[in-house]
Picture 1 (cartoon, rainbow, N blue to C red):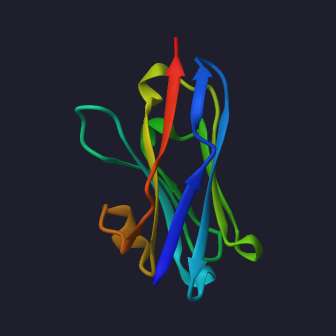
Picture 2 (spheres, rainbow, N blue to C red; picture 1 turned 90 degrees about the horizontal axis):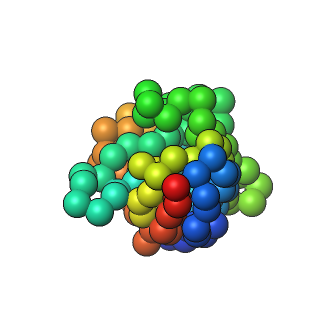
Picture 3 (cartoon, one colour; picture 1 turned 135 degrees about the vertical axis):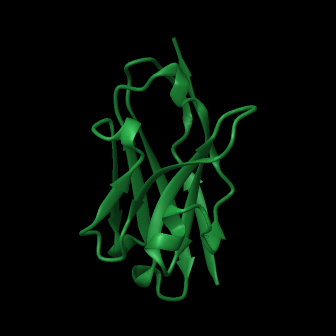
Length: 123
């Protein structure tokens, strides 16, 4: 079993930056692919980014590529999402996710979800 706890969300003005963290606990964290999803009010949950267990492969929603960066520190059992040049449309609840299969995670069916952290971008 894997437990995921997000932190780092908050209010930021447009154009600003924010870094989200996801602390994981449980068996063999380093073997899991990790990712981030988000859900805005009234909209469907969407894929944001993912990273392989080794950290050598990363994947992004096309429209976010270049602004968002996912990384992980297996020694700290933590995955990060660095968000730059934030826009009001980035406002959403951001969820951390984990799965042994990175492809299953990318299509939106991860085995584990965090509780989410609110990110609000003010114009």
